[in-house]
Amino acid sequence: MNAVASWPGQAEQWLDQRGKGAWIAAMVLGFILFWPVGLALLAYMIWSKRMFSGCKHTRKMTRARTAFTSSGNSAFDAYKAETLRRLEEEQDAFQEFLRRLREAKDKTEFDQFMEDRARRATAPGQPEQA
Image (tube, rainbow, N blue to C red; front, side, top):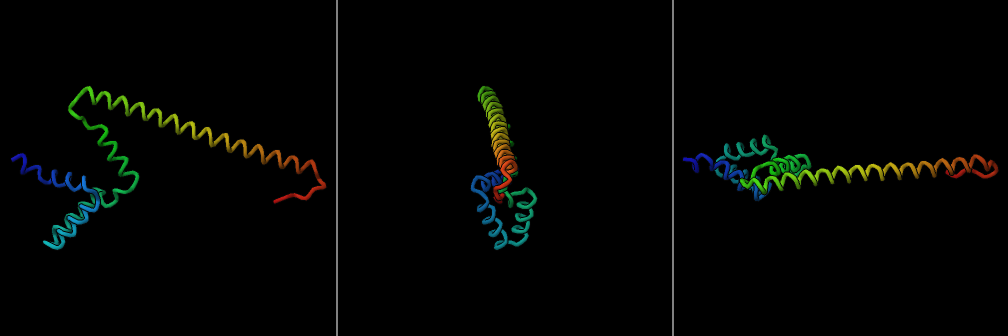
């Protein structure tokens, strides 16, 4: 009875492993065989956001859901959690580094602009360049 109850879940997992094309093929096949099945698959794909699986937000949510599922091995789960935490810290540190780098570049460009402006202001005989 358990295998019969879980066949929709197994079918969903099988289609997910093969990507959006498999879902579309199943939907088209559903329309060909019996149109309400195709319509139901289309509604499910839209409702579950499978039609938009290429977007960044959906990929991020799928990764997060996969990252926090237990493998059944507590030692591996602890290692995975620690590695993910460390990678998130490294990513945050790198993002902060990039922010500081952009700020430094902006400050350098602004300082250069102000020096050029001051130089033009002290040399009144020269025409200004646009």
